[in-house]
Length: 88
Image (tube, rainbow, N blue to C red; front, side, top):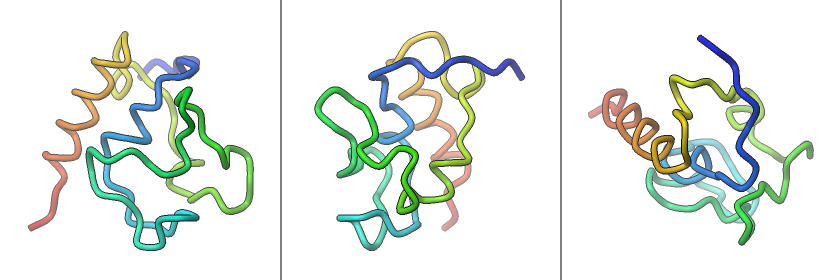
């Protein structure tokens, strides 16, 4: 698994997957395919580096397996992973 530098302004990891943890402004987390309320207009995290950022977000690592070569590819890869790991 090759670690990449995050593509500034991508935001795919803040859109494609569901997040079940509390997010400020989204107390029940967020569904897959919905923009996180903390994702700014230029696709940056408004709470990056802050204590209120969910642990799942802080733990995310940018890899070719998850992020592909483009934002569009990242959205597809992460959506596929979401579907493959969906319970129920």
